[in-house]
Image (cartoon, rainbow, N blue to C red; front, top):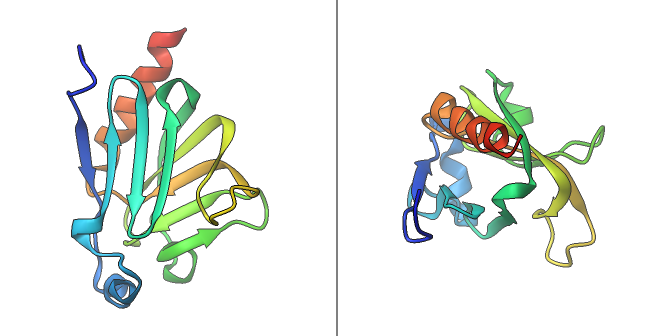
Length: 136
């Protein structure tokens, strides 16, 4: 991409299991992943993760998931990883060089990775893998 105005947008996949999330403002029109020349931004209703693109260390397609582990905003007690989930199908686990804020407003809790259940998980994962490879 040649300028910050060029933005790649990835929409979240929404299963019927995610319908109750609309009560929290988590709806298709309020959930997306943006990739620009210099940054990654993920919005999941009222939750947002923003980080420089050079903070992305890797990305892999993951899933399918169990509904109680993937739908909604989830925090892994094992590694502090964050999930923004609206589908039990596929997702992308994005790993960061430096942990990011995103699950609570103070920013004290930082996350080493973020899983997002976007509709086109393979394309987003490949795009982020290309970013990492270009840095090497």
